[in-house]
Length: 222
Image (spheres, rainbow, N blue to C red):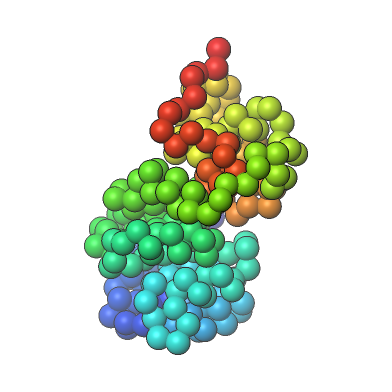
């Protein structure tokens, strides 16, 4: 299945460069380009991309503001030259599914698009789990019984904690001694029950409600 991508950046050279790199991939098609946030919102409505590769700093409406206005079903991969915490915080708050620096190579960019398209979370290597935890704790934590977490089963809650610790489906499956497909099903159920877009939002949610110890990983289940 071809991944449809919209590139939003105010620099024509950047847009053209990304288009060439991504169109060279057999499973990715760049369906359009946008020059700012307003243009990105308008073109997303008509082109229905699977992923929007969105620059942070653009005139008029910037990338983070645009991300807040997009449909929850639209996945956003934020690209920036600025490796600063506040941009990560704002990107996560805006609902972005991925965050990657512009100095990433062609392989990293294309793989980031694939990861975000399939609903997984992706952060640049310099953006650590500690950073997500710090963002999530910026406001007062909600009570653990709130925010619809009570709708989760015991197994779903357990998997949410592991997702928040940055574990992949494969790692979770190995840890809990269950099938990877079973983990995928549980993650999908978690997102649906909590009204979240992807694993990044699930991780932040788990930190915010006090479900996760940001330092210590829970002991393995036997």
